[in-house]
Amino acid sequence: MTTLTDPAQAPARSWVDPATTAPAPTLRETWEQTLSLAGRALLRMRRNPETMFDVVVQPLLFTAMFAYIFGGAISGDVSSYLPLLIPGILGQTALTACMATGTQLREDMDKGVFDRFRSLPIARIAPLAGPAVADLLRYAIAATLTILTGVLMGYRPGGGVLGIAGGWLLVVVAGWSLSWIFTWLGTVARSAQAVQGISMMIMFPLTFLSNAFVPVDTLPGWLAAFVQVNPVSHVISAVRDLLNTGQVTGEVGIALLGCAVVVAVFAPLAVRSYSRKV
Image 1 (tube, helix red, strand yellow):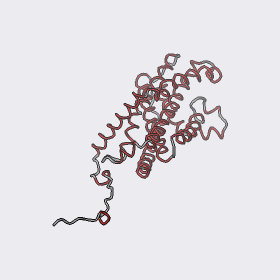
Image 2 (cartoon, one colour; image 1 turned 90 degrees about the vertical axis):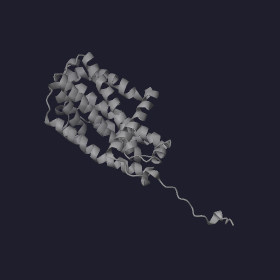
Image 3 (cartoon, one colour; image 1 turned 180 degrees about the vertical axis):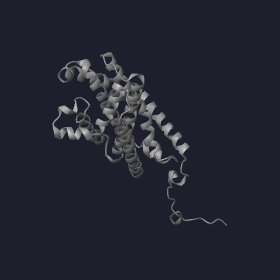
Image 4 (cartoon, one colour; image 1 turned 120 degrees about the vertical axis):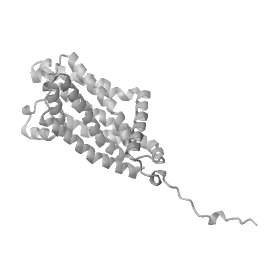
């Protein structure tokens, strides 16, 4: 004899998140998952080359524009201004390039891409760290083009090959660490437009209220005090020391320490906010 069960009396099945029931990924698995999602981000860049506009055209435009507009007024001529300008443009370009990380992250979240990632038993940090790793290519391109543009305009770094390599690497590291601030913004803002607006409000004061384009001793006292504590100023000073003299000064240590602090603070905040959002 067969017993029929009333569907209304059947126990309800609750959806179980596989990401929470699966064992926690190991460090190696987390790294492999991050690289897989970095590959996805690189594929997206290849299919949408216009996303590289800010790291290809902007360094060339800003380097030439600032050099020929301010070179004579600040340093007497363009060639004398380039040792001050090129490290400043490198700092500005790194900060501008990493702004796109948060905007693209928010766009993916709005489109439901991260809802799919949530259904996968992967590390929570992988969907955030993957695009950040892929963006290392953006920072490298921007830094390389900026230095090459400066050389074509007459800039001759006094730090030699090692100094250039050290300054270039520091710019890439600084861009990657600062991108975690904008990654966190991408997880807390309500739209991609909001992320972009907030990012611009952060970028302009940090860039233009720094030692990127003018010597600090030419500024009013109250402004010079802010410039001297601006973290972007320390990064730019460290890049100047490496490019122009090849010396690993205290500014290099301060810049690297600041980068480590930014990652230590904002990476966990981004992961926590992302976990709540999705």
